Amino acid sequence: MVEETKAEQTIETAPKEKEHSQPKFFMGKDEKIECVVTGYYNKETGILEFCVPGENQTDVERFNVVKHIFYFKRIPYNRLNNYRSQSMVYNPSDRSSSINILKLREYFWLFHLVDWNYTDENGNKIELKHDPNGVLTDESLDILYQIPASILDTAIGLFEHRINIA
Image (cartoon, rainbow, N blue to C red; front, top):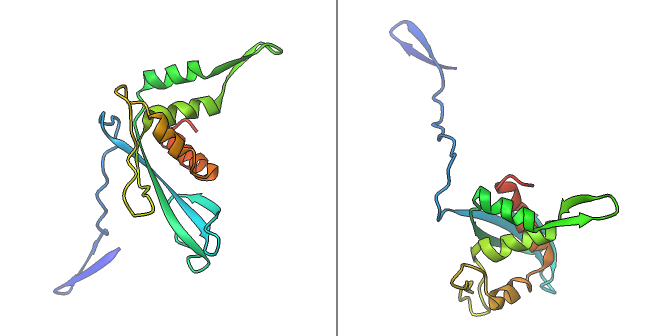
């Protein structure tokens, strides 16, 4: 509580509350979901030692710290269900079906990765290329798959969390 004194009278006022934005129930068609992964690279060898989700700046004196940013477009519910059904694997021994998570993640990379912050050795941004149907081209996929698996797994895990399926 904050106390204000005015001419022999003390008035108690509640602290001002921060304005909260309303819950966002709908996303725009072109709205992007940002997923940040912080990579810690050995200063001598340049090899990735470990990575963490989000932005983190610890141990900067021991490592080269790099922020990797991936932007995904949203997944409509009907499309997500289509991905899930196409990722199903049947197990004949117990007659059950389950989702092959690696196949599901492949759909996310192919159809929903729209941008990133990667640059070449000259500092020029490496543009992702998509075919007319919006699918990541083989050329861009080849570049994507050169990124360490721990970075990609962390980024796609963040994306799954943001779309509430993790």
